[in-house]
Image 1 (cartoon, rainbow, N blue to C red):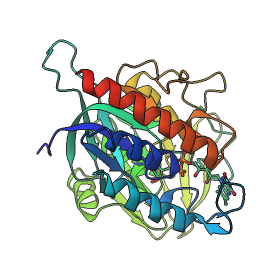
Image 2 (cartoon, rainbow, N blue to C red):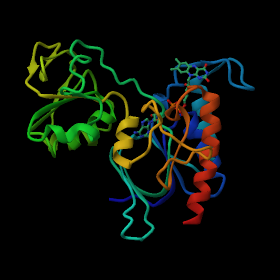
Image 3 (cartoon, rainbow, N blue to C red):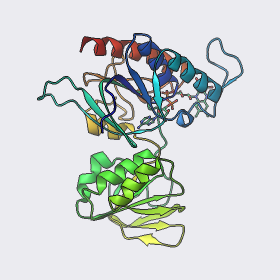
Image 4 (cartoon, rainbow, N blue to C red):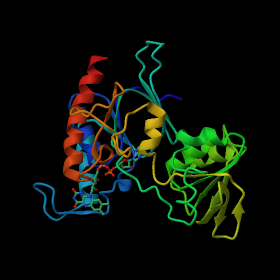
Length: 303
Ligand SMILES: Cc1cc2nc3c(=O)[nH]c(=O)nc-3n(C[C@H](O)[C@H](O)[C@H](O)COP(=O)(O)OP(=O)(O)OC[C@H]3O[C@@H](n4cnc5c(N)ncnc54)[C@H](O)[C@@H]3O)c2cc1C
């Protein structure tokens, strides 16, 4: 079911997303923020170098920022985005992007990506050696290479869940492995209904293989006979977004490339904050969030 149409959807409830929400909502537009503020890299930080604030915790800043954005009419929904479908250029109905969160589907004219950076390495033996030979960090990019094979996705958050769902259409068998899962229970049910084999409460000990992956060793003593291992820690990363939406990355291939108005190469898609590259600092995230909010508002108002 499609929830009410939005003017702007902001991915991320960190400082970039909050500032974008404040500026866009003050323009009188329907603004929805998706994401979890306790997953912002600011949550556990103690800030000493942000102008005009002394001795303030990241958690305090994030909670106040949300209240402030809500006071201007922005709505917050505590779920990650699993996939985004770009507008169908042929239909010309102006319906915009389709955004699928853990349990809901939204339509929106414009999107601001403020998802920060995520740690994506597992740090187990075999990971580095077998990268590109069965180990991947992007289901959207590499899933097709594993058609009809048995694969595992490692991770307990939304990126892993979304990746596992995607792989059920390609792989013969899909495993999902994590110490604990932190996405919506409805999404867990969807995974089970789609046939994903869930391994909860276990860590990965090793990825084995010589010229290619042939196994995933778990700390409960089991070994999964997989040929593909997708490491999807945290929420959807920059490579997945780029593969899904055709967003151009910068030269390092780690960050989204934008112009000074925070526009990406895809019309209607804007980005701000750590996902646009260093310095990975709140002051830069907030500045870019402000610009992105205003530019996206101008874009959405024209449609
Ligand atoms: C320990 C630590 C200390 C720090 N100290 C300082 C400091 O003193 N001063 C300073 O300026 N900076 C500091 N930083 C850096 C600062 O936290 C970041 O630069 C800032 O938080 C970046 O903001 P952001 O909005 O771009 O991303 P983040 O704050 O990381 O927020 C990302 C948001 O995106 C959401 N998200 C991710 N994927 C999805 C998805 N698929 N769908 C929806 N939402 C999604 C997350 O849930 C989160 O809400 C520190 C960082 C750390 C880790």
